[in-house]
Length: 258
Length: 370
Ligand SMILES: Nc1ncnc2c1ncn2[C@@H]1O[C@H](COP(=O)(O)OP(=O)(O)OP(=O)(O)O)[C@@H](O)[C@H]1O
Ligand SMILES: [Mg+2]
Image (cartoon, rainbow over all chains, first blue to last red; front, side, top):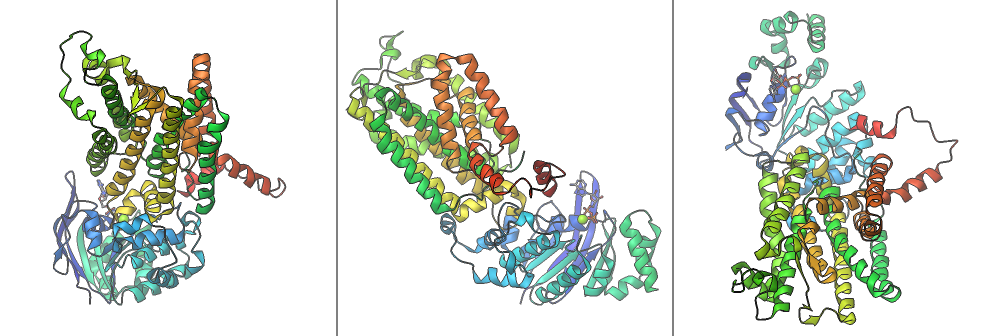
């Protein structure tokens, strides 16, 4: 069983501006963990700090390993994988080549000099899991937006990541694609830590087990979907700050709940 | 500019292409060409060897190596120093004692008396220099225009250094008048043929090496690194190492090209390795098609031919022609002339009637997609 991801008192500053000011949360295998908040709340920055892309202070531990302070590729090798807010796959390469590269960290460097033969079992499994089996030879650049997001998740699967940090995985997806993605995440989460950053409140309500709400770099509220939605502080933030489209969306959702 | 296409001919088809090229260079050319033209072809082969390396570093790896003259120089001067010493025998080379009859041989020349050391230097010098340079640059994430300018500046610096050290390196006059090549008399036609064949064979070996690299997982990883370096990092690789390997191999190829250039051309000067020479190498690669297997070599040979034939009879015109060709290729064939056949074939297959009129240019579409 995988150990938990425990983030304690995480701080990130950008030349004086505090983007994340003392955030703590934890995530365990078996739950689909959500991180929500208005635009600029610091969600992406939290993931950036955990994965070593930006420098953060405090602590982010996976089991007994401290992640902060290590270079990106070393953190990945500890089993932490992520996706980006904008799908980033290798457009020039086929789906198979994309997955093959993702699977590569378990291979010895010498094997890099050989050509690939056949499709590995882990790749076939990831393809079936994400419904991309038919797109094996398709260049990733011409996949649909949703398929690209799935390819990213498939890459994390073949990479054998113990922790999947997903930054807005259903943005731009159709309703059916969202449902498929949510179910996929629930399956994956059985054995891995899944942390989802999302704006889509409907998606969150359907698939989240526990939620952390960030606001201006602070944890505003934490708990189950029902607990978070009942929290007056959350309602205040989402109802009080008009402007951003997502804020309005959340407001609608919350009103409908009441 | 659109990204170079990397999915092209099937690998085994390309291998057949290398075989045809090998027959042309190693069997047909010596039969049909005069000694003079065979020697010229040998020179183009040397540039082509360096170009194959640039194709790897730039076309597949995205590193615009504008200072390959540096590595060309390492191989060339190592070879030239050995041949100079071989020609001078026990005496100190003539140019060194021109001003001071008692001048001693500089210490760094001494080991180049040994043929073994020289060959080792031709291989190891570029590996060490490119390895250290690449490590420093890639770990600090220097890329794009900064990388290009930095490498270019190094080529300028090295050329200037050589120009200003007349007694140690021959300065602007360079090193020349070699009589022997590892014991073989250089003006014997049979030996000249041998030198040509070595250069041509080395070009084929380099093509085979990149052929294998391009079809290997490393080749895919290199393209991935070129197109999305951050993403590669998040898959657990250190992109710096991936780029380093490609850069070192390209430097090694430049050095080998430089080394063979010396016995074939008979002279090496700073002009052959400086900024202009480095850019000319890049020009050939861009014209031929930087990401393709044959494009860099063929482009470099074409530019080499233009340079030595048109360039000497019609120097002004040649410069303009090259510039014009460059602009036309960049505008209409961003993936070089080697992408022309595939492009024409695709156009021929689609009849004009069923070809949809694109609302926006394909290049724009690429921009939107990426
Ligand atoms: N590299 C950076 N330099 C300076 N400020 C930054 C940087 N990255 C993020 N920020 C700032 O930090 C704050 C948090 O940004 P972050 O991207 O984490 O928000 P987010 O919660 O992911 O928002 P969104 O929902 O819009 O993606 C924002 O105010 C943002 O402007
Ligand atoms: Mg974000």
